[in-house]
Image (tube, rainbow, N blue to C red; front, side, top):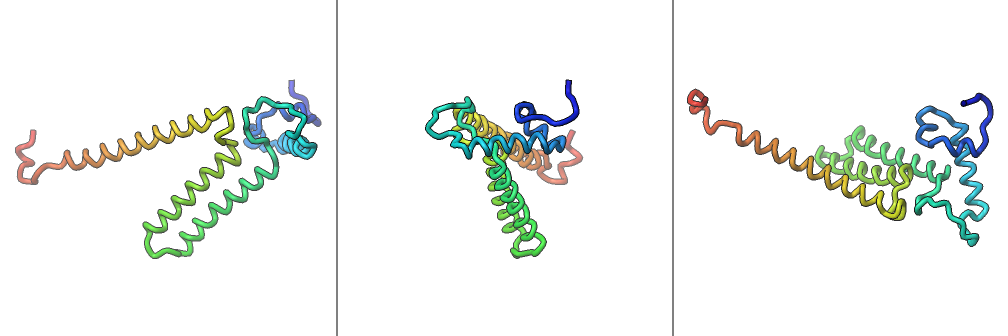
Length: 166
């Protein structure tokens, strides 16, 4: 049963971070971040040899989230400025630069917010990501290939042959 009032760090640790962010629950998130910061300040992974069983995943810190947030804002503001200021003469160049910023922003989100690294979960997260990217590339390129050839193959050879078509 959930009761109103103050919660401790143990109760805050049980609430998923995504749920706290989605519902706007600042207090449990602040307690979790504060507990992780204190853990790191006390020499969290020094010579005492204790482990948390996190599989090499990065710890949740306010500094990490702030760095990711400001990097995401920067990587959003620069392309916005490039488009609004009409910095490049060609729209193709602008689109290429925006796609490059988007790719960097995807990496920032995966590292700072999803905590994906080659060490997390024994490398399975990275392997699953690469498999997903491969499937998306195959699906998109196959769809574009089919649409291009469908347009090419469905057009009649000449408009004179149109009445003879079944």
